[in-house]
Amino acid sequence: MSFSIAGKTAIVTGAANGVGLAIGRQFVEEGANVVFCDMDEARLEKELSGEVTEDGRVRIFAGDLRKKLTIANLLSATVDAFEKVDILVNASRQVETSDPLNPDDDSVMALLEQNMLTALRLTQAVAKRMIKQAEGQDEGCVGSIVNLSSIASRRAHPELLGYSISTAALDQMTRSMAVALAPKRIRVNAVAFGSVMSASLKGALKAHEGFRSEIIDHTPLSRIAGPGEVCDAVQYLASDASAFVTGQVITVDGGRTLIDPVAVGAH
Image (cartoon, rainbow, N blue to C red):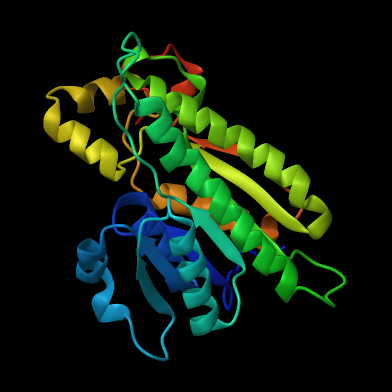
């Protein structure tokens, strides 16, 4: 099977920086049409405005995907530009700390909304479009959906309560939607990563002296990976090379989850 995604159309959320931006750029380099979506319009413009042309393979879309109308508008913009959608990468993530003993702390609900429910609603909308555009197509994969999760979904750290719960929910949503969409020939998988230079980890390294060495010390491969090392796993799941893979959560963490959890388990 081929790892090629050339000629496919992909929506990548959380695409203004970090891992989402890296995934979108790799997809473009590999010949895909890509709609880069993020809430941060200024950052999208800064990173990608020079790559957007009327007849090119790059588009940008800014909006709050927690709103159903924004999701509908994103899908319409994608179809208007490229006439179809073959791949969805839910790479938009939010990381914030929680106070596990404070009943007024609403971080769990906020992170569930951002990290799981938004991905679920977008998955539902894009899957309906994939099913519609595949009418009359009797064989082959109709589409691939890849969710970006975290190793925090399998680790317990009180200050990351909301983040851990939301990513664990995302993993289970991945499995459930994989079963629901399998009869429609749409595959749903996830990549859970840690010890990767994401936008959130960059911020944490700036804020906390000693974080870098602590992460490296607790990563068996003894380094922090670049965003591109997540991109390859996502491309595999988006391509026909993984045609018989669905409902799986692939871990990209340098072996981090094989050893004792530490306070930096989310990154």
